[in-house]
Image (cartoon, rainbow, N blue to C red; front, side):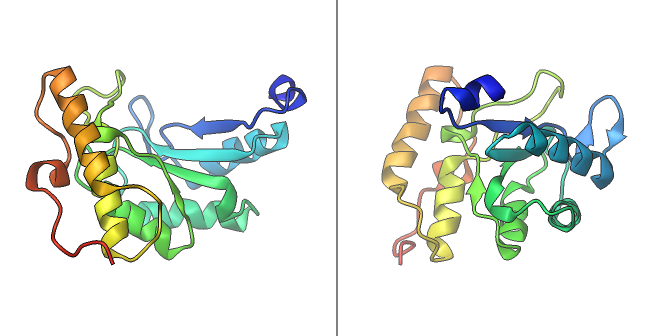
Length: 177
């Protein structure tokens, strides 16, 4: 981190398996806070708190983010990385947004996954996130039609069906305020 900072680079560190670990099971908010504080001490610019396995629900998100806030780590230096394995990624985004968080990872077509989590789904699909933000009136600068095209491209290249709900159903007329 020090070398990256010396070169003027922006550094984002991932706190993986922050909500559940394939080896240790449930992860305590204390453990997430300790790792996060250590990374902040190293001088990272942003933390990406990650639900690598897709096991978190909104109450888990509120609990972990509450502990991080109590430890003095501000919402504006935390990004969130949700996998949609169990269909809770968008609900987790809403829970985080209600607490003031605004940085979320997503991938076109919901691509991704984890070699440590057999059967895991990919990342939150960008199309689904953009549609949600549009419906909620949250500005973001992405074009839903363009993101849908990118998701279709990814699905075709990977030879699989789109993982995005919006990719399968399409947008909704008037969804962009």
